[in-house]
Image 1 (cartoon, rainbow, N blue to C red):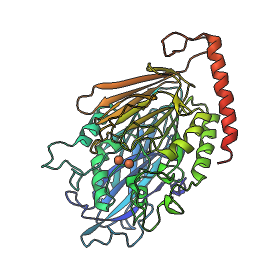
Image 2: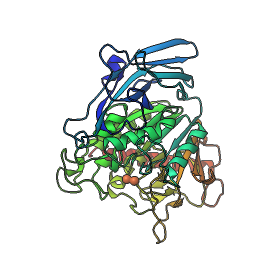
Image 3: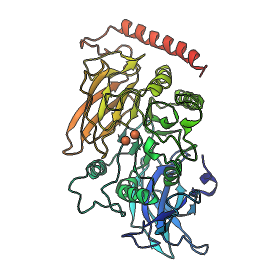
Image 4: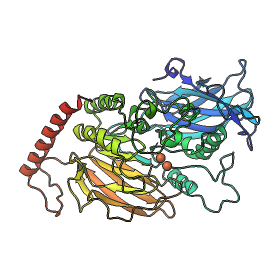
Length: 481
Ligand SMILES: [Fe+2]
Ligand SMILES: [Fe+2]
């Protein structure tokens, strides 16, 4: 948890180039809202171009919700890009400074109306965002990754010469849906210049300012000169901002930085600071991330939210160009299986790929889209957020492959305390092209089988006992990580 807790805010500073194009200096822009480290809080942050606020000025977040008088929370700068970064040195650079404040606690599900700015320079327009539900309520969240902004101007708007830009279609469809939460499993801006990030943050503002927005790192967030600085300065997230846990509705979410697990994915091999995977031979494994994962999953086991969703960039199972990431599969999936993770959301392959529930590398059921909670983790790749698509391999898919295809899309997930339903939604026309359900069944309820024949309760109970025994055995094994 960052310094922001003390001062009820945070922020960042970053010098940026040419970012003020189309935006009046000093006018709040690039609004984005993340969930704070403390429950039921928001971190609301924004940027101004040009002269940062002076010490005599009073940047604030003004927010109101039912039952609470309008609050005016002082905002501050947090973080700063290291001097000497390649973009900062550009002669055309226009400083951009990030400000933000934490507001809350806010009652679950409550609509918050807010604006940001200062009395001296003016405010943003007013936005409305809703606090995530509590664990007894349903949660509707959206996921998609691999977005990119190549076809946007510096002000984040569609270039007049661009006839087609799917990232806009995906974004606008998600805005229409008004979900409770958006998670982004990596590869956001694809440009690690300050101008590129400014463009991306402006492009995303219409969504990220009205829906809680929780990204995690992809390989394209890495810059050989700046490391992850552009990304880390752009969002204030819980914990160390790379691996963290938060709760929303009946779900515990765990975000990981799979870029830290060495494998065969593309990444910068040189630069300063060195890439996390560069200290030692390729493939060298640092156990700190799996230790942290186990620690977070133990927290999830001990809480009262019934569902656990993990998200990171590189897929453990993917029928795509990059394919299944060997290191992620080797080091993460046994832990997911041992600790009862329900759903793993990833990206990196620019397509949609969805598995059956998988245990020890093989599906535990197939031929149906109706699963029982506890069977095994289910793996979804949602990399159709706007970037150029990949063609799926022309060889036969693995036996664990349930559905997928080459299309821009997002996935929407409706979760109640007893049921999780995922739908893949085409960006072009909103058609649902894949759907599955995981149900929390009582032992006396029938469970689906590959043949569609209800399993006898005794058999199901035995299956669950066997799964539990396996999980406990595997957990002992994992202590060696
Ligand atoms: Fe990507
Ligand atoms: Fe990627």
